[in-house]
Length: 201
Image 1 (cartoon, rainbow, N blue to C red):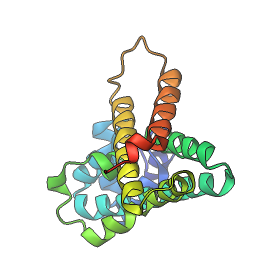
Image 2 (cartoon, one colour):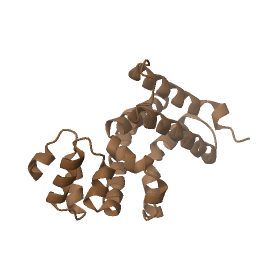
Image 3 (cartoon, rainbow, N blue to C red):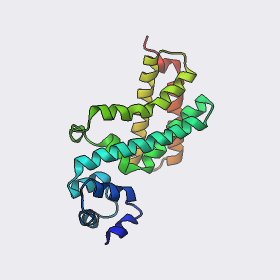
């Protein structure tokens, strides 16, 4: 398998290969890792196999956060109704996670022991992806910023659980996935809008 062939494997993103090479892995090392592990490699596995785990993982976290941020920002910009926008943001988050499981793994699932060298300030900047949710909820609810931020973090935890279960295929096979996601979106957005969910008093 040539390096060019690797870039065209349907289950292996081109930017993954380029990122691995940029981080220091030779095309041959990338090729060997893919050949040995198969097309369904996760980004983390490729990072381990090419010996550039820390650099590659950090680069992938930043790249993934940027992709997620752009997707959420587009929703925020294009939907004028705040309640509909909140639902659309929830849906976009789930769609991003399930559509980009390799990125999502290194962004939010990777065990903390492998994150210890990722700069805290960078991760805090990455959390700006919650801002569209915060700004949207502020248009809906008349509550303090502290209450809004708490509600959004609870919302994020809910959405993360949905994405993680879908990626791991831990949802009962008898349940229609699309229906599951739609109900999850409605409950996530509706719960965040509810006054009871926002009250700290």
